[in-house]
Image 1 (cartoon, rainbow, N blue to C red):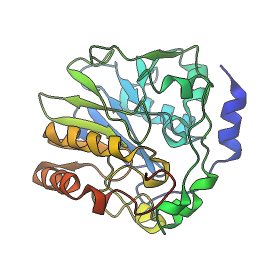
Image 2: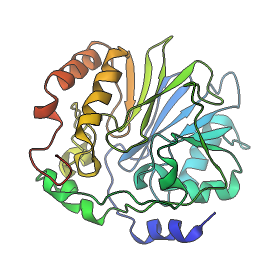
Image 3: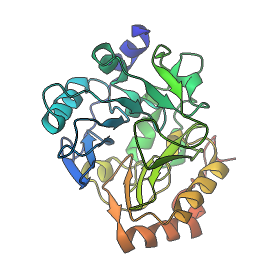
Length: 282
């Protein structure tokens, strides 16, 4: 594993946080959402039935000790996930993965189109501050956009849509925010882990991020590079008719509120989600 890439994350770490920082919520008995500063990660596994679990995304840089602590509190002192599944490879979703893998010698799964960014072969396009007047958008040029190298652990997700170590779950390709972005869905209870396919906070606004003001939004504008694909991905997840959704940023949403907001997001995508200007808009 390349540690130099991880050190770049440490050097460019941004001390943004929200009132939800450090808060965990058992959305379902086997689905636990934890907010790490401004981003959500998910532990999938029922601690009342098993010590087996899977970690979805790995949060911000410098959060490895915090993530291990949460895992131990939920699954016991020897807690170690069977695997890590990544919705995508942006810095706030893989920030602690290299440090975690130093202790956890486990497989990491991602879409095959995301693997170049997770093996040090490609960097993501830089953030675009022109998409919104919000302070987070204006700061986005400072966000790390380099790829990382975890080639000794990364594997492509199975082509049949199954998710290793996660029975009953399917992965769904939801590109736009990144080429290999995925969401995870369990049909039996309508549970959706959406990553950044859409979010439930206006991620471009520092005030709304800090206060976790809940509102439906598309993928974070400053890092989204294919808006046609992003729209198709929102339509795809809306068609699943999820009952509960955990997004990469913002509070979980469920029931009629989720259904109505997703419907509005599809119908008014250009007004709600797509920036009026920016270098990736066209």
